Length: 114
Image (cartoon, rainbow, N blue to C red; front, side, top):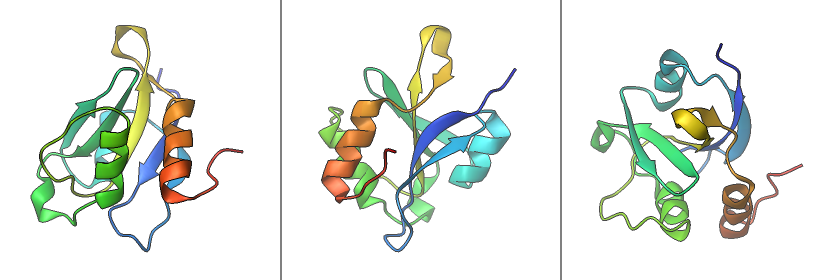
């Protein structure tokens, strides 16, 4: 059964807000959020889904900064909407970890957590 998880959504367009949103984690729902096929970058207890053909999308500097500050050394640009989630045992999706939300709040000077 697919239960919604709280994700941190970081749109590429700076005019769109960074937000926490309950999302379905099935493939079709995630592909709709990122507007295409899914690629991912993985951290210790989190991962971010991105469009795997991203260079045709707008660059996402906020997601780039968040990924690097969360401890993953990326060398390429990040494009399109980024969807941050956590992962539990057996590669199950889970809510985005609180430390990623707090880092985003600090980096982007936004109140995200309730």
